Length: 232
Length: 102
Image (tube, rainbow over all chains, first blue to last red; front, side, top):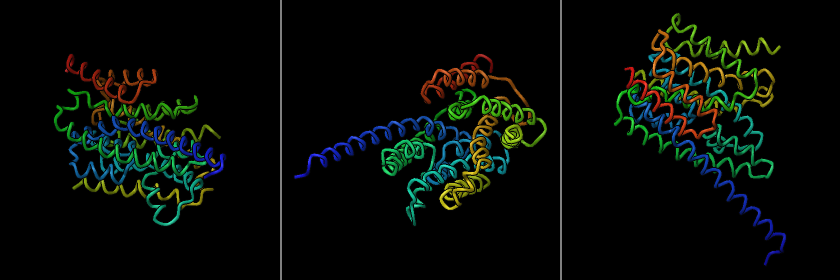
């Protein structure tokens, strides 16, 4: 027989676990359309199923994966494609530092955590940290997103095989539409909006003059340089 | 073969970047300069990606059905529509405009 305050604590914990589980499922379901479009666009870019699955299983970061296939699909060089994916992946390093400070994983656990350190798992862990459920929130979100992301990628790849040309199906704007949805929440200040506009404009201006794919790197890097120059 | 190289290097590199955050001393990543760069990079790269994949074909600038799709994506994101609605709305619009002006 447990004391009343223990019962109370158990009830609170059960409620927190339920809340986290529900939110993790909601977040997991919300990545499904992204995974479906990634799979379909990857097939149009002539990646084979093994390559598509490897990206979702190992790289496991939607924006980088989609950027890679977008640049390749646009005819860009491997350097531009990989460079864009890697530069987009740098933010996961920042998330990793936050998770490391919060949860201090060691050994093999650190490797596993690193693999699933992405926007969603980090946001949930940080949100639940004050209540003391950072680890629970991190793993629940990471595992749900990992499973649903990989499943939806495969389904998307098979669906993409059945569809027609990217222009006829409108799939040629699936990438830009997805990128718009990812970009909008990051435009938190007038300065960030201006930086985004500058990067897009620089990229377009360089399109006729540099190799295909390179304008994205040029716009991305010069945009950051401009922001640094003007924030002194 | 080229595709395999891209897939493998990008995958290994992105996993290394995730691991780096657990290994590199936090003060390096949390310096104001590093934070500013790491927070701005996704913004500038996503914006450049959007611009190029909508308004360019190879080395040419081109205004076609993709621009209509992007306009609808902007509108739907502005209305806080769910991700699925944004992507399907943009694709359906682009496909419709393409069918009218192939």
